[in-house]
Image 1 (cartoon, rainbow, N blue to C red):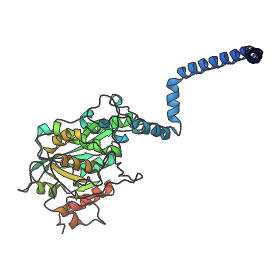
Image 2 (cartoon, helix red, strand yellow):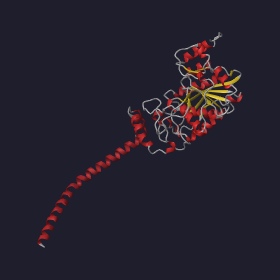
Image 3 (cartoon, one colour):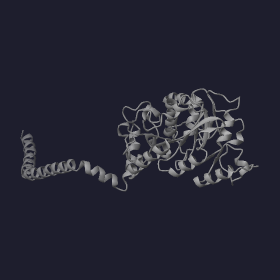
Image 4 (cartoon, rainbow, N blue to C red):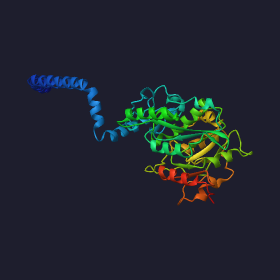
Length: 392
């Protein structure tokens, strides 16, 4: 018993010492606890008050975009598979308006309410339109030119050259320019300038997607949507870049040939077995997640391709099931493949050319397309080509 009592006494002594120490520290602990609680309340109130302004201040911080991409990279993992598209294609539908922020600082998570995906053109809306142009005279050919909103110089050069005539080789031809939303601080001024330009020429079509290089697939699909809904009675259409020389006479002559199909027809400079660029630093980079195959299906080079006007509606519909990626001409090739179709070689493939070393009047009289270096070159070459003397 004595041993037990002794042991009990030792344990009791230890407990008393601990309790004594605890009672001595308790007031100090309460003081620190109250101080920390008060500090938390002050910080919470301050953060709530400055929340709206702090966001804008954070966005001006030099490393904001860097960290924003990191955070959005982690959010992509949880995005629904049907919405997983290249970040440059993601646009929040409820934030599409005329004063939209630059795409680089828009949220890149999948928006709610988006139909099919961000590349599907009917998620966007025409904010400047000229639907009557196809009603006055049913066109044989519609030339659709994607161009940056601020590139008035290119549009004027085309209006003076291959886009000038509305009747070519006896056929009605329309030339229209497709634009997205401009970015930058002067977006309001650009809007007014575009309104004035359209009042003068009636040839601008503008939709509410951000006009960036990596949104060219959206831009092209919006072109297809416009053709399908505003100009379905046209026989043919051509998507042609704004930096191109187009011999419109040769193009119309080609399309008038008896053997040219009137349905399911796509032609231009054909690209076969082109590898997908996986180098992240490349302008043409496409991830395996967006496009898993190592090569693209056969497609027509995006500088300028011609198609029968039954295809635009088919492209719009089939695009619902094709994940968008940022190589627009290859994307159209994917649409053709999904439709069970394939591009056709033109009657004379040598007429669709990309680059040339120097201007040659005889050569330019025979081709349909050439890529140029500037709008000044287009005006200069066109003026020379239209001289009355024979070109060759």
